[in-house]
Length: 172
Image 1 (cartoon, rainbow, N blue to C red):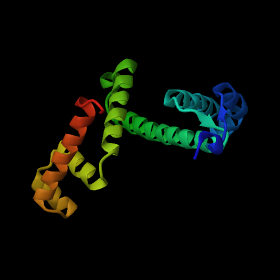
Image 2 (cartoon, rainbow, N blue to C red; image 1 turned 90 degrees about the horizontal axis):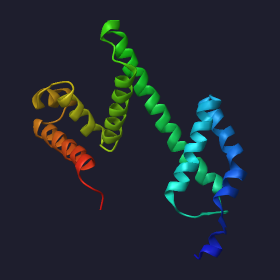
Image 3 (tube, helix red, strand yellow; image 1 turned 90 degrees about the vertical axis):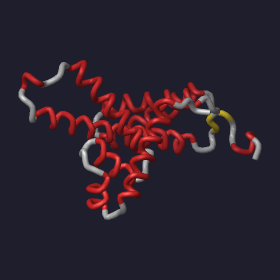
Image 4 (cartoon, rainbow, N blue to C red; image 1 turned 30 degrees about the vertical axis):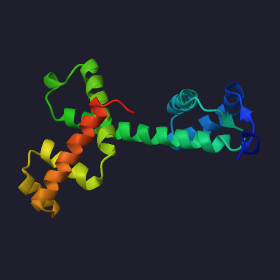
């Protein structure tokens, strides 16, 4: 199908001017906060710019909604991660609380780790977390998950390789 058959290309300024208000309203209903909706709407259009592919007039709202939906999911995941981190901090004495800068850096690291682990199958991720954070042996993890010790070894090795590749290999 030619570009002409797919629809005509919409200039970014027109796309923004035509659909920004709709997207902002859609996001406000999704997240319940007008400021967060405004940020997510801007992020959606930034993603569209970075994507560097022309947008046709065929279904621009569907494209915007798909990008925005991913950003909303990321927002909720980050929010849940931050709440869990802050709850954990609440168990520590006030004197042990990190500075706002350290807290911010820690949350960024936790978010990056969560993104890395998101690419793993749930069983692999669980075995890896039990091994790395739970300090359990392969045998104990195998008992807990109801799999063989060898399967746990493979899961942990797979997760380590996955994380290594994400951190150190450049995309081809």
